[in-house]
Each structure stands twice: as structure tokens, then as C-alpha cells.
Length: 320
Image 1: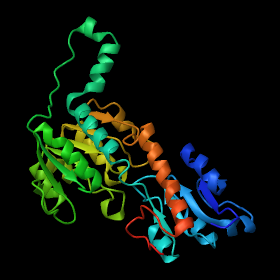
Image 2 (image 1 turned 30 degrees about the vertical axis):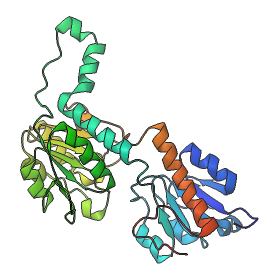
Image 3 (image 1 turned 60 degrees about the horizontal axis):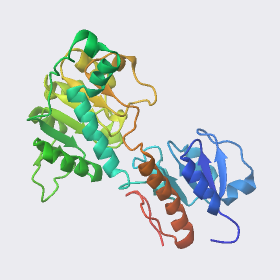
Image 4 (image 1 turned 180 degrees about the horizontal axis):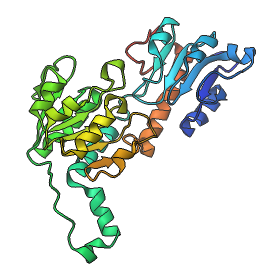
């Protein structure tokens, strides 16, 4: 890098470790999240990188003439218009792998919470009802003997599948193409998988192809013993259809860590006894978020020092 520090734009809130480390190497330019705000032409010209957690307004790509890289905090990067970035020759990176274990662990915990109602049981104890009303009611569901179908058998999906094996459940999956060398059952469509299993776990990202793919038809196919778990993106679910399916016992239960319009959670979910709800915390531990933060900064440093990045997104034009 030259003697003049490279300027990095930071729209909105981001992990404090990122800001701390960026400040050691770059000129940090904080701006509000959302539409482009006025900044001086000299500053705009110095900005060559963006560190983002959330959605990057396309206006920044249009108005930053020397932008080279957008470093995204998170494995999902649907908040960045990668097509537009590619058209401008801009590198986009994300933070895969460092959060795989944490998300997979959380998925198993959410599945157990959903079928065995452990959060409700703890509240029962804390409210003094064990002593007053007797034992917590038997849970109608169990993980024992279930057939689990995973939508999205990428890095995180594989870690979830590995963790499920000791639970002695049957494991299947659906992806765009069959994965070779696996003992898991492959299903050619989401509908086929929903009909064959009694537990669906979604790990898919938020894309046009996955928008509201979990419909009333899929929930009906899953059936009255069905359990739906979502740790991917809330945009993949028709939430009205899911609420109706839970109310009508079209499916038995759901565990959700993600929602369509976060942090806005539909009121219809909140009073459902057969829904286990988390505020998008699958990767939210200090060690994992620190590792993600470091990867955001290391991608920026690597690019401006050696024109190399560690974790480009698949669509990005890696150069140099």
C-alpha cells in the first residue's frame, strides 16, 4: 500500500473489532446505512474499499469512482448486488467457514428446542409451576426415529448432517445437483423431499431462486408430524403460510432463527406454542463473530497489499 492510507467506507453499524482493526491500516469513512449521503469529492476519490454488514445501497457503487472491493460481514451476501459489482470490476468477499460450526451447533439446538420444548420447560420451572402444577407436560414430539431432509448441503449443511448422524435419524438432502460419495438420500426437488421426510432444515441463502419457496404446498407435503427449521434466510419462507400451517396443525412445529423482514417478527408467530423463535443468533458467539470480523479486514488488507483475497464470493472477478 502507498504512504497515503486507503479509505474504506463503512455504512451503518458493524462489528467493533472491524472498526478497531481497520483504523490501524486504513482511513475509515463512516456513513449512515441506506441511500448515498453527501461526502466530499476528495474523500470519494480516496475510497477504494467498503466494509459492510447488511445491505449496500447501489448508489455507492455508482458514485465511488475508485472502488475496488466490498468486504461483507457474513456468509450470506444478498445485501450486495454482486451482478452490479461484477459489471464494475469490483471484488466482493464474504466470511464463510469460520461460522460453519457455530451455525451447525445452533441448528441442532434449535431442532431439539423445537421438538422437546426445552425453552418452555425452563420457563415453567422459573415461574414456579413445577412445584405448583406438577411436572411439565410430556412433549408430543421427539427427535427419535425422524427422517430429516436438509435443503442446501453446502459447508454448513454438511456440518449439520454430520452432527445429526449420532442422533440415529435418517438423513436426506436436496441441492441443485447430487453430491457424490455421500450415504445420504438425494431428492430431486424440495416437494419430493417434503413428502418423504418429517423434518425439514433450510440452510439456503436469500436469492431470487429461493424467494418464498416454502409455501403452503410444501408444508402440506411435510404433514402433521412435520417439523420445519430455518437457519438460512427468512426470505425463503411464505410466513403467512407457515403461521397458518402451525395454527391449523398442518405441520407440528417450527424453529426459526431468521425472518422475512428482520428484526420485525410477525405477531402471528409470537403466541404459537409450537414455534421456537430465536433473534438470528446462529453465529452469535464472541469467538465466531471475532473470527468473521478478522476475515472482513484480512480480505481488505490482502487485496490492497497483494491484490489477493481469502474468501471471494463465487460470482466475483478475482484479479491479480
